[in-house]
Image (cartoon, rainbow, N blue to C red):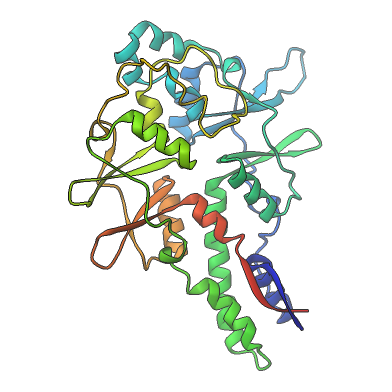
Length: 348
């Protein structure tokens, strides 16, 4: 036996195999992907997309090219996210630039917005590689392709469900290990590395914060610099009062005359692009933010944190300490990264 650094995810599978414990399928993309695919076509409009999101409670949709011949099937061409169209659709935009542009934006066909040739995975892609791709490319949804055919999709919601499943399995495995006569104490230690982990262990601390009187322009610069999607808002006594997301910012930016590139070289570079003399960039964040955001404590478990994010369909949670003071923030990305964490333990 020797110390070899492998991922905690792989180590759990190794321990389970060594004692004959059956884990639920969760190693490959096919184990966690959504198979029921709802889609729109290039001929649908932005207005159709907004209705689709509202009806299906999603933020991304697969886009197909409608067939031109009888009997032909639609062909997958790409994806569209809520962020892609926010600057063409929001009522706030209409107030600042005129209702004509707002109406024009909602009537645009999706062919103008679709991200073609998105990063994809196959059903047999290992989960760790899938998660790595999502984190490295700052994406929340990936198509699953098999022989040029779209067979599923993966979103951050799928990964949160995976984490909850993994957490349940690790706790059951730990209990089983306790009753195993020939149990290895090193294996128990490895499992405890997961079961003992809380929000305090994975949160970003101190979190990015701005004040109520700080501006929209300051928020954009801070998010782009740090490649983050959220900034917390505190008052004069440094108490948490709100949160601003990249979507909140996009809703306040003026109507965009040009479409963003399919793949941005810099984080949110094109989405946040505005002329230097744009009106409204000095808007105080107090007028933009969401007040009284849902929070967790630093002792919240990973599964509890993941379930709150999943059930509320949000992507971050501020963290409060035992004195109810702001001490950090946990994002979906933080939780995804825990599934990739290394664990040094004796292995064969």
